[in-house]
Image (cartoon, rainbow, N blue to C red; front, side, top):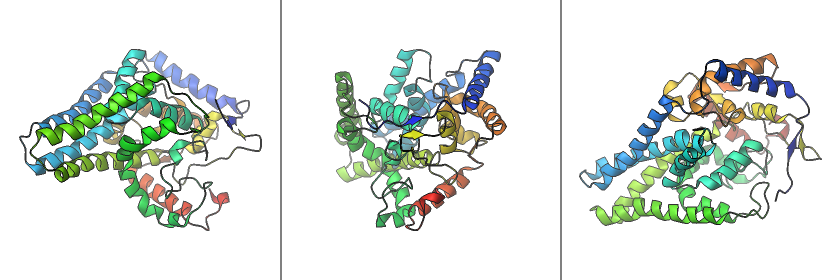
Length: 366
């Protein structure tokens, strides 16, 4: 059941949406290219899974020093972030393959690294992608009570320090996800715009089984099989999650919480006055488009504009279609938010955190 559902004025400014969709579709048709994964995407999948589980296998072998195992734990964190960015994300959007079974199985990689794909599809695919940067609806804006990611959320004194606190908080993202967030969202009511949402029994079972498996191979097995103390295990486990959390937290924030992106509010009729496609353009930001290594690792999430407009297209294609989207946006006079480098995007996010943490910062400036 939906509650206080925000809608968009999709009867106006339809031409941009129609044109950009037509042009991107023509690109795939004229070049006889599938919009799903290609050989490069499959190779990347193997490499990232190999990094995560390969590092784990080396740790659990017990053949290395504590220092080497610590480095391998951090490598698992890098692999975990990469799996989330480049495999799970595409699969859970149904973009990796035209085969639903393939998407489902690859989507389980999310559960294999401790998170829950079902809840992610609700909070990210449905809620975030529909209500991007809309306070009270976009769950991605609700990181922590001491982090203010929307100028429309309640101000607290602690927000004065959020430009410092936020980066530490991001580091605990996956740790919180594994032990708290998924359970919390299963019981949360309302969940975004959904009230009294019933979760299928299958998903409850998947949640419990996958969590037990994850706790088993990351907590129980290392303590049982390795000649280490509990605090040595904890250092490794936290190194894994602090690495993955920091990477994931930073990347996702650069897409929507920067100076150029907007935070629209619905009118008295609970309607956003823009067409949905235009709303996505003004609330979303790309960065480091020419950084091939970064684009490879984060699954094209630095092409967040293209991802929001075409979530069913595999991320491996975003670098090419981004030029189609930008050209079309320029023709229609619609902003195409872009930071040329990763460091510029991080700096913009930092300044935004400072602005939203300033009690004198007004909503008119947002």
